[in-house]
Image 1: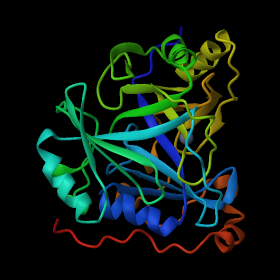
Image 2: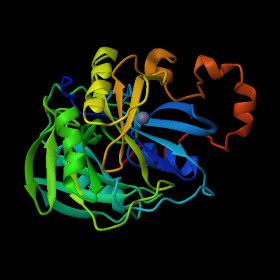
Image 3: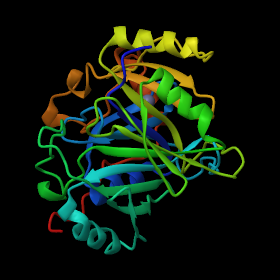
Length: 321
Ligand code: ZN
């Protein structure tokens, strides 16, 4: 088996309008806009990355905003239902107030001994904030200039909840390839934990009677797991193959190298390297401030920019709350 992953690297979803998407993740959730580029596989679509100050692995939710005319997705089996970020345990009231003051419906629940706030983004993507005792050495960099006070900022991923028709096929991909272990089970939910623990190390599975989901606006496209380097990534390719699962060749995504594999429950898994990261083509101070393209698309910049939808950069209403 390949060496175990240390957890989630990023989550990528399909949004509608790019302006509304960026306004929500930066202006409301207080994530930093760390990269403004295009979908390498569809250069008429932006690819936005939101994360901590540096876009550290384990903090980034990323979007292909298809515009409001994009085909709507349908929730169902084989999809990521909720993406959870960790917040400090004394930030619960702050977040309930912040979200409700923006007319966002918040459901509050207790799960595995932690308080969970669940809500949806403007496109219907399920999000959670989980109040968690956080390790001081968590590799998450606060964004000093953000609209959310540093003490209350999101602290990287807590978990994702994957909805599947039955537990076992997806569970075996998690345990036999990626090194996750079953940690707890309650209320129809199984929690798996990556070997090293720490931020973003949990994956929850729930079973659903819904038919197979359909990817589109308002759904998650894929989730990515961390690999230390390409050597570890190559071993995941072999480990997927040992399970009879076909994965792609290693793809250069500029900020990381990736392989993709559709696990047997239908969810697209990616394994992404932690290096080189988002500062490879912009200074940390400048992250997200302009459209950056990988060198193999730079020659087409003019035509790419002409095709992209209107977008002014995220608006931040106030820094007071
Ligand atoms: Zn990805």
